[in-house]
Image (cartoon, rainbow, N blue to C red; front, side, top):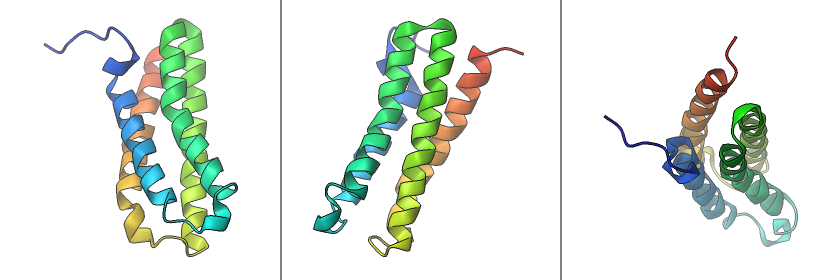
Length: 121
């Protein structure tokens, strides 16, 4: 039997979102210096927003949790879009993004499942 979820830190989706944010920060270090206050900053904020919204939603519970899960999904999509732009701009080769994109896929699936569980039909 699995351990009970006492707080947001027990949620596997939150743990993966932290891993994702760490990976994004590592990738963003490779961006050109002139992007420090542009794409780099925006990407990092979006990536951090994923775990932050999961945590805040869990603290609120109920319908509000579902709302914050939705915000987390949006932040995840935003950061993925920004990573794709970084590839297009030649800041980082696509192959170096594999870990981040793999985590993003896993998180997206988990957030979708959580959303379905929080908003029954």
